[in-house]
Length: 232
Image 1 (cartoon, one colour):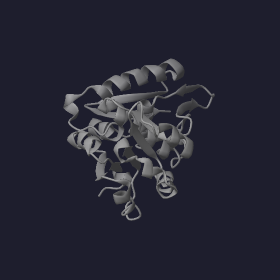
Image 2 (cartoon, one colour):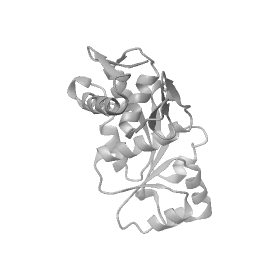
Image 3 (cartoon, rainbow, N blue to C red):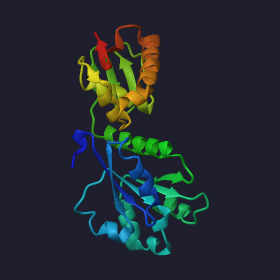
Image 4 (spheres, rainbow, N blue to C red):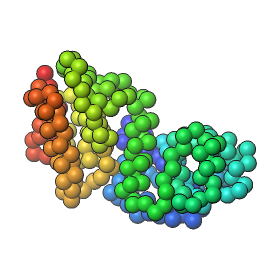
């Protein structure tokens, strides 16, 4: 099993009816950053949770019952950090989850698959920020906690989640070129790059944002499907 450094995220899916897990498993060939592990109950999960380490826990409402809220199970919920609860709009336990857990992430059904992945990415980015230091890029600094790019003259631009992940990937390679497939895999977990122009679109917008604030001292260059940061 690949670890975090090899771009593989282990995700626990606790889902009695296996509906959420089935949706994720159907898309696994495209989202190769993630590997999903299914558990049909909190009890089944707690039997192995001390033996496995997961980056995020997806908890479907099918495993949330009246018995879930006894002190023993609530204790386990509090240990599952970070987690994402997947609930129906009128789920009767939502308020109790909000009351008993510290800022739980909640996704309301129905939802589009891409929105679920977006939330998972946002949670992972938030967790990764705690482990990274700011990155120096010549006369610029990529501020990890603020998700901003700052010049030594204190000019600043804010980056979206996707822009931030692109920048981190390129910054880790300094001025060296990175293959398009590598960036797609890191940012979206997507392979088969010939099917998408997603990266080109985001880099085009990112270049304009950088140029408007910093001029040409810092830019993203490309060469036959490879990308690199160039800076003074």
